[in-house]
Amino acid sequence: MEKEIFFSKKEIIESLSLKDPRDLFFCADRLSQKLFDNKVYIRGIIEPTNFCQKNCFYCALRKERQISRYKMMKEEIVDLAFCAYQKGYGSIVIQTGENKSQENINFFVDVVRRVSQKTSGKLGITLSLGELSKEAYLQLFEAGASRYLLRIESSSQKLYENIHPHDHLFDERLRALEDLKEIGYQVGSGVMIGLPFQTIDDLAEDLLFFKKFDFDMIGMGPYIPHIDTPLYLYRDRIILKDVFNLSLKMIAIARLLLNDVNIAATTALDVLDPKGREKALLCGANVIMPICTPLKYRKDYKLYVNNFLGYKNAEDCLNRLNLRLKGINKEMIFYHLGDPFHYFSRRKKEDAHKQI
Ligand code: SAH
Ligand code: SF4
Image (cartoon, rainbow, N blue to C red):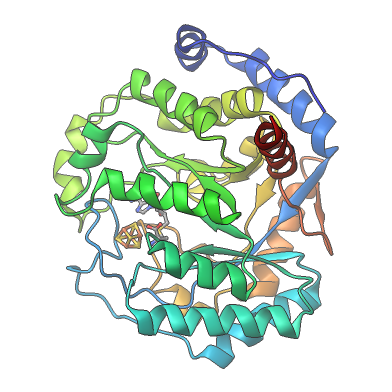
């Protein structure tokens, strides 16, 4: 495995401020190539419901927004997952709005169990269902989920509190991330870049937070202001300039700092640049998430404006992305779980530590 590169906070700030980041991108890509060759891990993303109990100020799915809400049937979700498996996806992500009710937990425990059974445990199941109790995370893990994505959104408590209602507690989010790690999940987190009030210093702290927390997976993308959300009122308080390039720099530094983690090229990047995801894959990212949610639902799963990506169906989405990857000489890996190497190196370190 590659030797870890240490960055001080000052060096991170300097790298984030680079006018010409080509050398930074080149170094991050070289490390990515060493770790993954030209291969890109794929996860089919399924969005079974847009119901949400929360009111995050930036998100278009927030509870208080009057939008058409949907929830797929269990069978439908299991079929979509199985269909992805048959197409050669080694892994899926199930992502929804947050719903802590026991009924909802039971629903997804059953979905995970059925998908796991139907694919003989060979399909990696990642969940992104928001903040749940430790007990719920445990039930989902025991049913067969192995990875969980929960963004910290911003590691600055002050900024976190600016972009969430007062009952969305920063400490609760930290607790949830700790619980996931303790249970044994491969844990992913990330932040939005270009939030109102956010500074370069905050972003540098975010990267150091990822390092300290020892995440296995990172998903970051630009904040896309949505006109029908409270944070839109503060769009003139966005301090950071050139958010797209800043997002690429965050990805590149994350690769160099965190080494063998998985880093997603997120769809929000495509909102700011039609080749956003390709560019991310050329400066450190190694994961892409083609959408498997049927269009009849996807039109109502718009977290931010414009993430309705103009594809006809899941197959079309995959084919389009495949063509885009070929254009940059990258290749999707099929029939492969794509577990983050970091998870295994982290677990080894933790086990060695326990024995001392
Ligand atoms: N409800 C779950 C998962 C769905 S939201 C959760 O909150 O964890 C997934 C991610 O969408 C969030 O973590 C947030 O970072 C991102 N998101 C929401 N609104 C956004 C916006 N306006 N711009 C960019 N990303 C946004
Ligand atoms: Fe709900 Fe997630 Fe959107 Fe917050 S970010 S409102 S929890 S879907």
